[in-house]
Amino acid sequence: MARQEKAGQAQVCPLAKKCGGCDYQGIAYEEQLKKKEQTVKKLMKGMGEILPIIGAEDPYCYRNKVHAVFSRKRNGEIVSGIYQEGTHKVVPVETCQIEDQKADAIIGTIRGLLKSFKIKVYDEDTDYGLLRHVLIRTGAKTGQIMVVLVTRSPIFPSKNNFVKALRAVHPEISTVVLNVNERKTSMVLGARNITLYGKGYIEDELCGCRFRISPTSFYQINPAQTEKLYKTAMMLARLNKRNVVVDAYCGIGTIGMVAAKTVKEVIGVELNGEAVRDAKVNAHLNNMNNIRFVEGDAGVFLEGMADREETVDVVFMDPPRSGSSEAFLQSLLVIRPKKIVYISCEPQTQARDLQALKKDYKIEAIQPVDMFPMTEKIETVVLLSHKKADSYIHIDVEFGEGEGKIPVDSIAKRAEAYKPKEKVTYKMIKEYIEAKYGFKVHTAYIAEVKRNLGLPMYDAPNAVEELKQPRKHPTPEKVEAIKDALRYFAVI
Image (cartoon, rainbow, N blue to C red):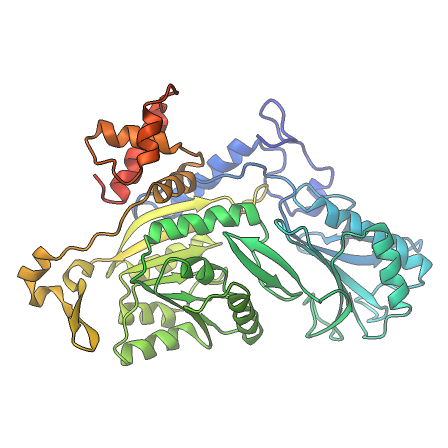
């Protein structure tokens, strides 16, 4: 259980009532998970199997992106924090239960430097002042830290000395960027970035891939849970080297690049041009040649593929909180991918979209993931499979110089004789169990269950040898998890 919880009780933040950012203050984490699971069950009742929610090992200090707004009290004191829910009144924050602690410390140092450098904070009412916001982004795996100073003007007095003074206290800072937002708007970031120190970006690692993160890049805020989320999505999709995958709403390419390691081709589609540029850089960074990115509307792109009679095996979609558009959902029905993996941070709009797909698609599994502990927000992964997929199975047949695909229903007898089966490895079984159940199983445990079921053991001689050594046996819980994985991969 989290380090701040004792005897099932959660520590209450002193700013809970003023801030409003955390909905579940004072509620034990296990109880939070139950509430979220019930929410999903209520919204998606009768749609498909709802799996137990995947919780976090530590529900505190998970946010790798911390935003602080600055203001001045009537007595002249400079404060930093967040807007009170539903207002533009700044609630002063020194530390936050769900924010990265280094980020909070850096913001506190910046607040202290403003007076000595005579830098005025921005006032929304008068449109006067320089510093509007500070944004801190951290790389969980790399330890790199980006500081973004959001200002009203590109002219920042003594900027070099300011950065030098900041880094004297926090040498761990990797880069400092000045973001210019001259508009009178509630939007935090402006369009122009000026690098004051470092490279102007940081890098982080996720699911074995490396990603470059700029001030405006979309990157999941809870890296530990994101890895669980993406691994779950990949497990549900059951990808293989023959698959053509579309990553709709791909952003900087995170989901697509995780999938690219196990498929034939990935096409990422994204409307935001800057995100597409970041995605291309990330693909190059990971030496991936089987993924490409297209700037444009994902629905229009899929319809174009259908017009060209191109096929898609799996579509990953991770739309914004408002859900997917009706046009995009219709494009899915036109292109008819065998599987759709729908990731959402808003199960209410996701449930609405699933209703539009239910006619042609069966909802195989609904997996809640707690990406945002202490809040009522829930992430869900839903696997859909085409109801008529079996009658449209394709097999590869050689035609001299090239390859073609013939529908199985036109060569039924040959289809009976030709049933290629993907090799299921112990690694795949272990990853499936860890993603779904949250615990690890030893290779020897899998071998023992397989032996007890009378299954062949030739593919893991080391595991067979380990069976002969004195050791503990798997618990009933792990035996059932292993059997579940064997059923999932059609081994039994």
